[in-house]
Length: 389
Image (cartoon, rainbow, N blue to C red; front, side, top):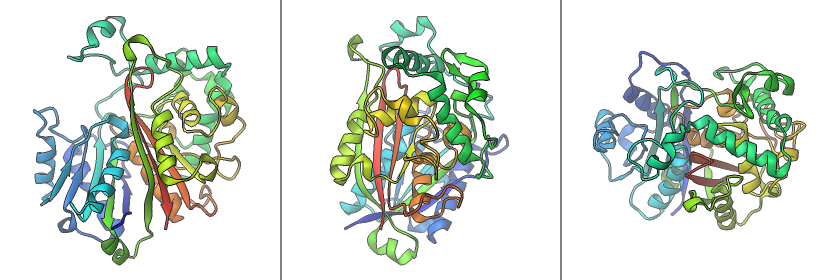
C-alpha cells in the first residue's frame, strides 16, 4: 500500500485577533479537504502538536480539538517536536497508512503569536521545569540571542559574513513579492538588510523571521482514495529525524540535527542533494538556513556563506531555489513553527502550482526540512524528500 499527499492549504490570514485558535485549525482543515475533494467524514487519523488549544491542560488539547472539529478517528498522533513536528507528521502518516492503521490523515497547524503581540526573538529560552533551566535561565537567553551565538561562531570559525547571510533574506524577498498573502512583499537589497536595526549581534532585524497568525493543513491518503481524488499525487521518497542537544557541554553550535536527519532521508530516497530541484528550508533566522543547507549536504561545512551569496537561492537565477513563497523571513511563520508551510510550498512546487514567477521548471523532486527547538541548544530536525508521481 502506498500513501500520497493530496491536500494542502495555507490560511490566508496573517493577523487574526478576533478568531479563536480552534477555529483557525478547523478552517485550515476545511481548506485542505476542499483542495482534494474530501469531507471531514473521510478523515480517520489526525496529527497535531503543541499548538492545538488546550495542550497546556494536562495534554487534553488533542482530544478537545478533534471533538471541536467533529472527527471520528481510528488513529491519533500527537508527536511534538516544535517547528519540525509537521514534517515528522507527514512521515508518520505515510507509515500509519501503509501499516493499515488508517486511510485518510489530517495534519493541522495554527497559531496567533502576532495577536498576542509577541516581539521578534524575545521568547525566553530555558525556562520552566526543564533540568537545564537552573543553569541557563540566569543568563537570560532568548530565541534571538541563542541563534545569534550560532551566527557569531560560524563567522569566527569559517569566515562567514553578514553580507552573505543577507543574501538569504534578499532571495526570500524576491519570492515574496509574488505572494499576495506575504507579510513582507518588498524586495530588499543586501545593503538594506545590513542597515536594519541590530536585534542580537550579528543578526539584524531583517535577518529575523516575521511573526504571524494563521496556519495550514495537509491531507495524506491511501492510494485508492488518492487516485480517486483526481489531484496531483505527491509521494514520500525518504524521511529522517534526529534530535541534537548540548551533550553536557561537548557541543558544536555550527551544525544542526539536519546532519543526521538529512542523511537518513537521502539514503532512504536513494537520491543525492544534486538531484533536488527545490528546497523548503526552515528560516527562523538567516543563519538557520545557512547551517541547515550545509548539514543537508548542499555544500561543504563552512561553505554556506559562499553557497547562498549572489542570488544562488533565487528561483530562475540560482542553482537551488528555496522558500518560493517568501518563507518565514517574509511570508508566514504561524505559531512560530515553520515546518507546515515548508511542506505546503514543496507540494505546490511539485504540483506546478507555485506562482508562475517562481515556479521551478520540471520540478519533480523537492526537500522540506525543519528544525524545532533552538539551533544553538536542543532541537529536533526533520527532513522529507517528496516526489511528483
